[in-house]
Amino acid sequence: MSHVPLPDNAPGIVGPMLAYPRTGQHIAGLAEALLRGPSSLTRAEREIIATYVSSLNDCDFCSSLHSEVAKHSTGEDSGRLEDVLRAAQLGTINDSVIDEKMQSLLVIAERVWENGHLVSKADISNARVAGADDQAIHDTVLTAAMFSMINRYIDGLAAYTPTDPKIYELAGASLAERGFLDRIRWDLAGEEEE
Image (cartoon, rainbow, N blue to C red; front, side, top):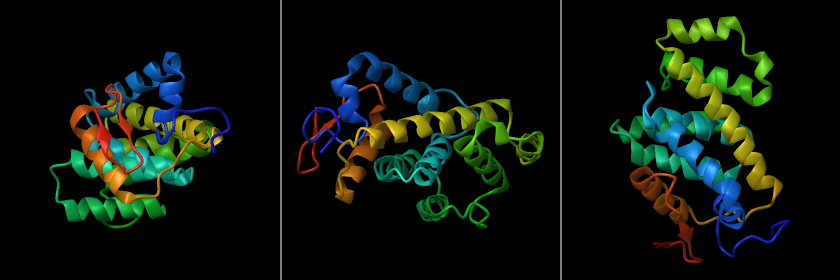
């Protein structure tokens, strides 16, 4: 049961966004701009960063949902993406399945997650050497900061976190296709309502 009244069966961030639309619209707008807007990072790469930070924060809702969004956002080999997501979820970012650029960006994301002051000039230099540009570094830092906030928002309110993987699969496909500005609701069976 949530700590404050939230709409029944509205999972994760959806509940607080519907209950508090004044702030919810801004969270949705930031997520849309950051995860789907122009960037030198692919949508899948940004979703991997979101999944990684959410896993570090032990936020089951966001790590489950954003790993599904990543799967539906990529044109890459799905087997490789599964390996990358598994490594990110397990915190094994030095795994050989993750390229050097993503490894360096996930290091930056982890530093931001722990304390933004821990991001060092060496971390930034390593990312640049590995092929990350200023936009990629910016988007990594903001994604890590935003998901640390969202994860704490969801879990701090004890928002409903479904356990059925099918709910995340359906929601991930929907978010990959339609984005974060649509108001998405899921019923108890895990089916989307328009």
